Image (tube, rainbow, N blue to C red; front, side, top):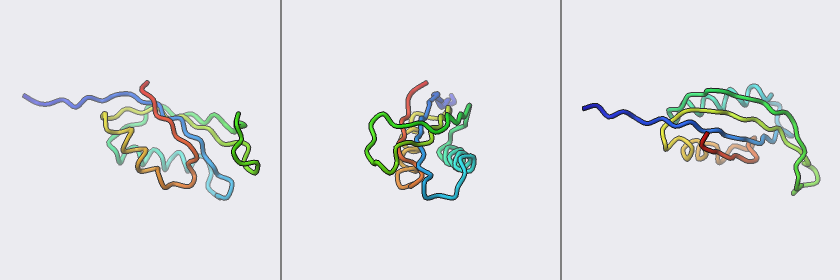
Length: 100
């Protein structure tokens, strides 16, 4: 009997902080997709939602951020592994991963 690996669908909502970076949003998205591939996940859809102002501003010098959404499929361990790989990345301000 072969064991089939369950693959779930997730949506990652990410706020980027590119103030001091010369990197474009497209290159950050490409890097995020490569990170998802490294945790055995496949990207279903990606959306750049543009720059939006924060409801609660924690830093007056940074009142807004660039929002992106990535929908991906992967094993149940993929969200934790993806978040852990992005933990020290300075271009990521916040990340929220939900089941889709």
